[in-house]
Amino acid sequence: MPSGLLSRSEVLLLPLLWVVMASAMLVESDAYRYVTLALVTLAMWRYRDEVGLVSSDWLAWFCWLWAAWALIRFVIGVTIHDERGTSEWLYIFPLLFPGLGVALYMTRRHLFPAATVLIAAGAAGLLASIDWSALNNGERIFPLFHNNPIHAAIGCGMLLITSVCWMLYALETGRYKGWRLGAILATGIFTALLCGVGILGAQSKGVWLALMPVVVFMSIAVLLYYGGRVALAVLAVLVVASVGIFSALDSTSRVAAPTIEAAGELFSGAIENVDPRGAMRRAVEDSDTPQSMRERLMLWTNALDTVESSPWVGWGNLWQREWRQGTYSDNNHQLLHNGYLEILVRHGLLGAMVLAIVLLASARRIYVARRDGIISASLMLYLYGLSLFFFITIATNSNNRLALGESYFLLAGSAVFAISLAMRHARARGTVISQSCETASGT
Image (cartoon, rainbow, N blue to C red):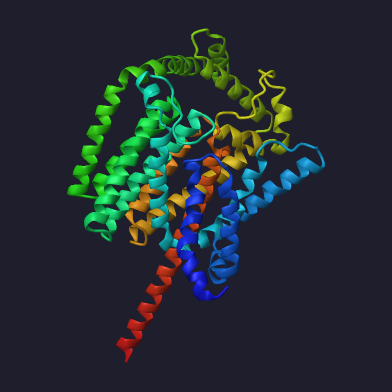
């Protein structure tokens, strides 16, 4: 294809690809997997110099070594033990983070248009999918296009954070003026409010819990990093949100109160007896424990039994074999409804340690990039806020195994490597400028 034609097609194609990458917020599908392969292929084909740069990054090698370990364990489980497990390939995804990061960095100018399309599509999807009559009657609703209301609530939460940071970016950069800025703010606020309605209506207690610290964190961060009209706008949004929460207080209390009470009793029992699994078993047997919580406790008890039998490296593909020998062996669920236990039963404390190292290294790089002026404050808040929300939600759901979780890890992992490339190029430019100044002063 001629280079001119390819350049013109990129203006439409590349934003569309990134929209599909993030589309799991709106529609529960696997389309992002195919786009990931396409973008990594693009990086290997067109941006080989940047691929070479990222290949010298210790974090890239760390991801590749982990992916190799997970792949070897998977192959051994299939060929020797005839155990395929479930969603084991998810742990090989870090293999793709560096290449996808190169594609993200090299196509970064297309990201704001992609976010604009995603948010507008999200607003349209929420308007089309929210059942207002059911909402008024206090019934559970299914916003957006997901397999169940819990997934829908998580998608709404991620879209809400995206909308807020999209608006902050437009305000921070000052690239948009007049009616364009007005349209961005109106669309962002409208989408965020619809997301709030969807989250309340979906009645997912885990998402409600996750949003509380995220709202507090982002509000404080915005007040610290931004001033003037932006701070006033944030306070106005908080007032509106508080009014909305107060008006829905009866409904939220009706849904959440039994679970809160049972969770309080479980926590106090575990503290008093220093026996978490014993407290969990007593809660399962308690008739006052809500059914959804009882089912989760059964799953978590089995998971802890499985982890205890191989705490350091987990069971790989064989975890289900051990799972069936747990306290509640008649439980047929394959989702543990806890992302951390999902990791521990498969890869033990080693897997948890790898995740912690990647998260800490990523958080550090994002902070340094913002400190040095390489990325915007809005991008830092977006990555921190979205990650905080996601990692709280996986404490009560296996969201890391959903399309939402897979696409989140791919996008967040690629963002870290894109930021790492931006930092490397910034340092290289600084070195060149410094050398030029030294040469000029010498002459």
